[in-house]
Length: 84
Image (cartoon, rainbow, N blue to C red; front, side):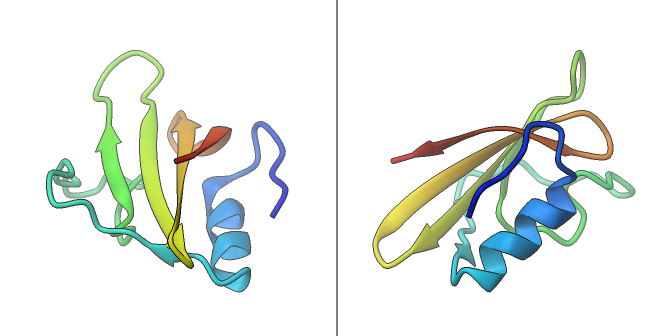
């Protein structure tokens, strides 16, 4: 799917799920803090910074492919993507 910089992560997440991507829970992922709307209910969260721009990283998988989504801010908005 295509994403626009600044697009709300909830919309990005919906597009990924509709395109058959699955949240990928990373074994060494940070724990989402209570009340953190950037990662609450999002098992794909790998890490969220607690300072600065509040960057987060989310992991997705589909048919052996891995995709990392980077967000910024709270609430989280799309900043970039990387295929592994």
